[in-house]
Image (cartoon, rainbow over the protein chains, first blue to last red):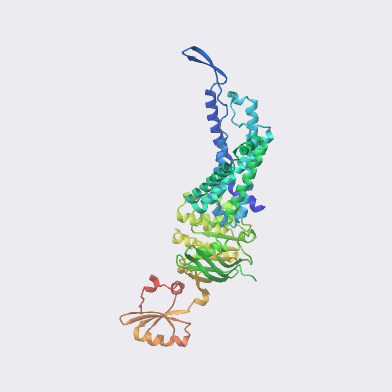
Amino acid sequence: MNTLINVARYHLAKRVDYLVLPWVWLAFAFTVDLVIFAMIPVGHHSVLTAHGIVQVQNTSPRDAGGLGAIVAIYFVLGIMSVAKSLPFALALGVSRRSYYAGTAVLAVTLAVGYGLVITALQAIERATNGWGVETHIFRVPYILDGPWYQTWLTMSVALTLLFAYGMWFGIIYRRWSLIGSIAFSAAQVTVLVTAALLITWSHSWRNTGHFFTALSAVGLTGILAALGAALLAGGYATVRRIAV
Amino acid sequence: MTPPISVTGLTRRYRGHLALDNVTFDAQDGVITGLLGRNGAGKTTLMKIITGQEFASAGDVRVFGTNPVENDAVLRRMVFVREDQIYPDFKVGHLLRTASRFYPDWSDELADTLLADFDLPAGRPVKKLSRGMRSAVGIIIGLAARAELTLFDEPYAGLDAVARQVFYDRLLADYAAYPRTVLLSTHLIDETAGLLERVLVMDKGHVVLDAMADDLRGVATRVSGPALAVDEFTAGHPVWDSRRMGSQASVVVVGHLAEPDRAPAMAGRLTLEPLSLQELVVHAAGRPGPDAQMMRTSA
C-alpha cells in the first residue's frame, strides 16, 4: 500500500500537470463557449428580409462542447503517466504491478474529485439559467443531465475510462513507439469494423439501435465502467510483458 | 547464506541474437563486483534481468533467494542506475525527493553532499542537464539510496575525471560505513581496479572470467628484454602472448612466479611486470585491444 501511495506521489510531483492544467484548460474552453453563446441569440429575434421585418424562431441547440476539454486532457495525462514516468520508477525498484496500481489509484481518486467539481459547476449552470446565456456547458443531453449524484458517478467513470485508455496507449508507445501506437489504433478500428460487419450480417442493427435507445443514463454509465475495466485489464496485461 | 544474486544457466535470446548464453554466477554479499567486458557483451542485459526489467529466455535468476520479476519485496531492496536512464520531466530536487521515498535507508545528508560535490543545481529540470550532470544525478540516487543491492551500469558517461574520482571516493567511503552489495559495470578498468574486489568478465554473452581481484594480481606476467634471454626464461611456462621487435621480445606468461623463478630474470636483464587488470580483461575477452598491441620494450 505504501508503495502505491509513493507511486501516486511520484506523479503528483508534477502537480501543475495533474491539478492545475486541466482546470486552466477547462476555464479557457468555458470562456470560449460563453463568448460564442452570448453571440447566438435565444428564442425569437427579428430579421430584415425582402418581406419586411419577420420574427425568426431560433432552434439551434444550446449545447456547448467545453466539457470535452477536461476529458481530452485526462486522456493525455493517462498517456504521460506511463510514457514519461515508468522507466524511472522501475529503476527505483517498483514492480510494474505496483506502478500500474498506484497510477490507477491516483487516476480514480482524481476522477472522483474532478467529477465532484463538474457536478458543482453543473448545479451552478442550472441555477444561473446557463450562465445567463442559456447554454449547456456542463450538461450533456441524456448522459449528463440527471440528478447530481448521477452526474458525479458518470463523470468519474468517464474520466477514469479515458485515463485507462491513455495509459494503455502510453504503455504501447513506451515499448513500440509510433509504429506500435499506429498498429494499436488500427487494431481498435479493426475491432469496431468487425463488430459493425457482424451486426450487419446478422441483421441486428435494429436490435442494436433499440438496445441503446432503451438504455438509461445509468445503464450507459455501467457500460462505460465495464469498458474502463476492460481497458485497465488490457493495459495491465501489456505492462506486465514489456521491457522498457 | 543465500547469495544476494544467484544466476544459473541464464540465456536471453533476441530475434536472431543471443545476448546471454548460459550465464552462471553468484554475487557475494557485501562485495563490490566489477562487471567488465566489451560493448555488446551482455552486461546491461544481465543487469536488466537481475532487476526484473528484462525477462530471461531460459535459466534461473534469484535475488535474495527468490525470483525478482514483479516481486516488490525483492525489488525494493535494489537500485539500478543506468547510463541510458529515461527520467521524467522533473527538477533535480524533485527527482531526488521522489527517489528518497522508495528507500527506507535513503540519506538526505549524503544526497546533499553529493549535490555539492558534483555542483548540481537542484532547481534545474533534468532534461536541461548536460550528459555528465545527468550521470551525476544517477550516481547520487544510486549512492544515497543505500539499497542492499546497488547496480551501476556505466554510471559516468560524460563525467570528467575529477567527478569520476568523487564517485569512486564517495562510493568507497559510504560502502565502508554502510556495507552493501555493489555490481558495477564499467569500461574504465584501470580507474576502477582499486575499487573492485571481484571481477566478472563477459564476452559475447558468456562469463569468461570470474575471480577475486586479489587472486588475479600476478596471475600473468609480462617478460620483456633481449629476445634470447626472454625465450630462455619463458621456456616451459604457458605463454599467452608473444611479440618481437628486432632483438627485443615481450612475452606474457601465465602462472604465479615464485622468487626462485624470478632469479634468472635479474641475470638476464629482463623486466617483469605483472599484467594489469585491464590487460587481463583484454586477454580474457579474447580480442587484443590497443593496449595489448602496444609493445613495451623498456629495459
